[in-house]
Image (cartoon, rainbow, N blue to C red; front, side):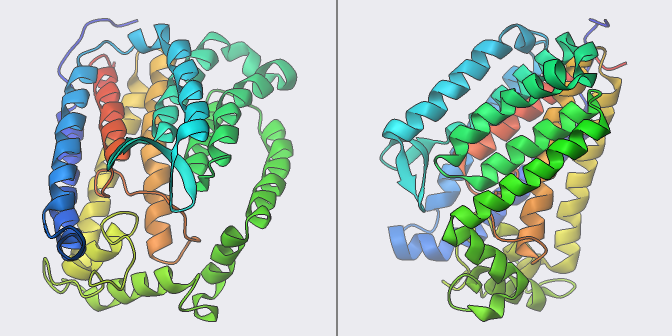
Length: 363
């Protein structure tokens, strides 16, 4: 294995910091009205986002300079800590929007589900790299590999938080498949997975309402379909060049969570098709460099860990943009680097730091 450390991928750093900068500006633009009305401070969310961004950049710098195979040594410990935090949040966590997914005091808190994403990524990558020949076997390969993310997924669904659970399982399924799992095994389990996913939707009336609202939001325009209708009302008037930075109309108490899950709607409204396309191109640039790092990593653990991180980001982007444009049912998934949120932003930047370190050893 190549252990000669070189410079990190500066294109990846550029894309990350550019997206982060856009995110801070858009969090202010999208949240200023609500923050002024609620907290008498238009910069309330922006100041907190800046703090989280600084913490995240610091964490990114640290992990960029910690050789990534250290995470293989501590992967099991990190996974067990993730499990412990997910159990703890069920016992003493704070409920927000019907989901008991937060640990913290006052207005500050962390989401253990975000930590679990990285914990599962590291431990699953270690297990697969240590047991690569077993993965083609169903009972002693695929099932133990799936048990790792499923243990966290089950705890996350008890909160419940389908969005975080979907990203975690989607990333794990991608990595296990790339590690060499047989398609026939995946097809068999896939049918069970689809049945289970349908069961999760049917078990909660609000999830079923989101599905029906996705099919026809105008069936319930003031209820389940409200968010997606208001999101489309934001995107449509944006046109080619947008209404102008700060000129959104939907952020005036029309679109719920304009600075969080639906921040891309405000980007499209204020910056138009051009602005939204630039954001998506930056994500594509980041994903390209991340995939390049995954392919050229010097060992299998590095391959799979890099794929886990970049796959996690890609899945979140696809689902979030799909939701705000009406392509997917509404889920509580943030847009990486842009949406307001401390745990999500800090953990994503930490993951990018690990990815940058792997890039320093790429062939």
